[in-house]
Each structure stands twice: as C-alpha cells, then as structure tokens.
Image (cartoon, rainbow, N blue to C red; front, side, top):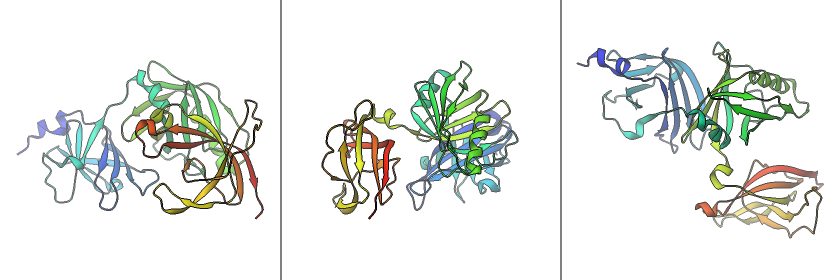
Length: 346
C-alpha cells in the first residue's frame, strides 16, 4: 500500500500552473491550463483548437485521493481527475489506473513564472486578450469583458502601453520595478461616446490600473498573464505573439480596397471571391502623391480588417516578410489604420 506520509500531497511542491494540449476526439486538441492553489482551489482553462475563439474558464475546489497521489476537481471542473507527480500532471480517463507511467499525450507540464528581468520583453512580444476579471472576493467584475462588443486587448511596446476594446482607446507609459510590480503613468484616452454599459468599462479599467499590479507571466505555447491589485482584484489574459516578435519589423504599405469583391483564385488555386485593391502612396504629411496603381485581386487575409460590401477604404498596413522565416505564403498583412472610408452607391 502507498505510504500517505510520502505521497505527492505531502512530499511535493505541487502548487502552481500546469499547461499542455490534451487529446480531442473531433478537433486538433484541447489547449489546457490548470492552476492548483495551496488552499485546494483550482482554475481551469480549456480551449478546443479550431472551435473556440477564447478559452473557457472554470474555478472551484479539488480533493485529494486517500493515498495523496491524485486529485479530483469538483463539479465546476466536471469531476476531472489528475495524477500528480513532480512538475507534471496526468489527466486520468475514466477507467485509467491512477499509477505511473502515463501516456505523454495526457500530461500537463508545470510552468515556471518568468524572472523580473524577462517581464518587459515578454509583455512587449505578445498581444494580451482579457479572458476574465474578478474582484477581491473572487467574484466576476461586472462588464469585464462581456459588456464590450469587441475583445479587450492590452498592448505593450517600448515602454508604452495601450488598451483596445473598451469604449475609448487608452494609452500611456508603463514600468516594471525590481519586485515585479507593473505601474502606469497617467493615461490619455480618446473621447468617443458609446452605449452606457460600454462607457462604464473605461471607468472600471482605469480604476483597476490606478495602483501597482503584481505580474505573473507564464510563457510557452499558451502564454498567460495575471495582474493582481493590492486588494486582490485580478485581470487574467491569454497572449498571442505579435507579428513583430515572429517576423521582425514590417514594411508600411497603403492600399485602397474597392467596395465590391471580384472573382479570383486563392492560394490553393481554387475559385474564390477576393478583395479588389490598388496601391496608394502618401507623403510624410499624409497627403496623397502620385497616381494610384492598377486594380488587382487580393487573395491574402488582412489581420484586423473586416470588409463591408459597399464600403471603399484606404488602409495603412504592416507587411511582414514570412518567406524569410520559412513561410509558404510570402507576406502577412496586418491592419495599422483605416485612413479613408466611403459608402459607395451601387
């Protein structure tokens, strides 16, 4: 019989965050992150790849098996069972014996928080999407992020910081001190009017960012960022590496997008409908120069841009060279700004 005095529960430093991609019967996998706390509470994030836009979050409590080597999540975690070992967990399918060894595909690996000196670089190399926010009692903060019609993103670059997705775009400076605390300089914002529930987000977010926030950043295939206030309010984000971090600095280009699409061939040679675009040029004062280029079909997606039929736009784009990094498609286009927009009558 196992000796409870020398079990995983008593002998290991098991508290922490574990992550990995677990098998899925009808998708490429389930991106999973499980945080185990010393008070025997948990936080589980599950994202079915190619199906879920964002992870689903559940929080509850877990119990230890009698031998102290496995845990069971409560109903908030659908009763999932995990075998616990040094630096790893194994998800136990129904009927699987709770003993090692276990299939590597069923395992989650413990993540190590980054050192303070690494934090600014990692903050700036990712775009952070707010997944949930909770107050000092662990209850969801009303309106975050559900009241926003768009995802809420935090962006860091060269000591600067901005927020997208609330009513107004907020921006300012940021710093990380020697204790891993994140502080913000006085922020400016745009002055747009929105629905009352969305406008309230500006005040809520500004209040949360008024004081220093403790950073916990876990980097890997599924990078996560947790910002905690002195009152234990928490903002939790998932991170996606920026194109600049992946491909280097972009080239700025301008294109005009026609109001209607045209028939074309996509990258695989199949028939498709493409944007119709032409090149535009502007001087340093933002004034148009030279004659526009010829209209051409444009089969590539533009990250951050959604075409509306009947609307002509002039776009400022970031063009990243993927071919230099082994990409099959030579360029990645990311929307930087819509500089002209016009509804065109049919």
